[in-house]
Amino acid sequence: MTGDIEGIGGAVTAGLAARAVESRHGGPAHGPAPLRCLNCGASLAGSHCHHCGQRADVHRSFGAIGHDLVHAIFHFEGKIWNTLPLLTWRPGDLTRRYIHGERARFISPLALFLFAVFLTYAVLAMVGSGGGLGEELNKAAAEQTRAAAIKDSMQVEVDRIDAELAKTELPASERSALETERDILQKSAGYLGIARSRSKSERAADRAAGPPVLDDPVSQVATSADFISRNKIDTGIPFIDHGLQKAFANPALVLYKLQANAYKFAWALIPLSLPFMWMLFPFSRRFHTYDHFVFVTYSISFMLLLFVVVRLLNLTIFGDVATFFAMLYVPFHMHRQLRGAYRSSRFGAFVRANLLLLFSLFAVIWFMLLLLAVGISG
Image 1 (cartoon, rainbow, N blue to C red):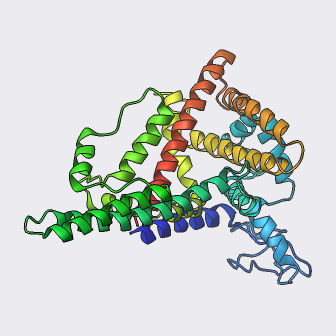
Image 2 (cartoon, rainbow, N blue to C red):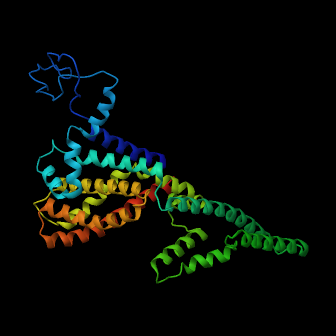
Image 3 (tube, rainbow, N blue to C red):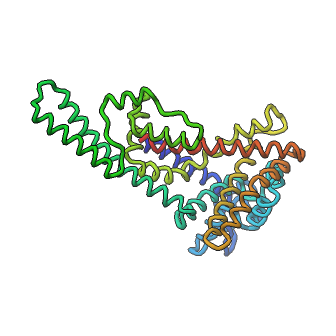
């Protein structure tokens, strides 16, 4: 099942990439132009076919491969320099102008989004997530996997011993030997720094009591996760129970799947964000779903590119300064894009920018839950 879901994610990403970067016409070349279009056969009366839009000259040289790659993604003939400055400082103008039909001058939002996703993935693969966070997560996941394997094996032995001790006809000498073996297993768990094995009655009582309720949300999440890992929770849905069991048994594998699937399902950020954009302008007939799509796609693209820049600057002495200014600029960028794209008042854009920050958090949470569900479903 996971393979099918991951395959769908990869297929959608590839399809979006192909749709975004596929040019309607070929690139320039050298040599005499043909009399008829090589694509549709129409008579030519200029540098481009009036019927299908393909250039009259097509190339087959090895050196033109690099040009095709750049041209297909960005149409670099001025588009990149028209798009990035506006995206950085006047995102609202860029969004509004693209929506209203001024599109030949700019990179399409979907093409820019896919490029930003691939660039982010490539940079993270080369330099890591930064701040030691990725390394700490990998170490914690590996340690949890090791501890879970030891704990499960010890729990199996304790359950076997408890089953033998439950027999009333067990001789006293064997009972004493089994109790000694059980004590040794419990002490070994303490030496290894893992939770002691518990009897079935203890586990049942713990499940019935449930996790403790704490005031600190962070502590509550950690305590609840520990409760789930210590108890075999039965949700009644087999594939969820199986996924949770595998996740807690091998969290390192789940973490790897999260990282591997993040770029495959990055496109899901767009549909997850669209309902929140509608909530900013409910029942408005001035704006359509396509308008929100362009806004969201350009906004996410900028955030990804900003993250890449900050991550690279973190490799230098300017990392802390870059991070500080980026955190300040993100809400300012949202405000400018809202004000320019939707022609909102200053106050209206300010209120909606604050709501958009909150909605962005929800969208990211839903995206992470999606990745988590895909990671544990196999």
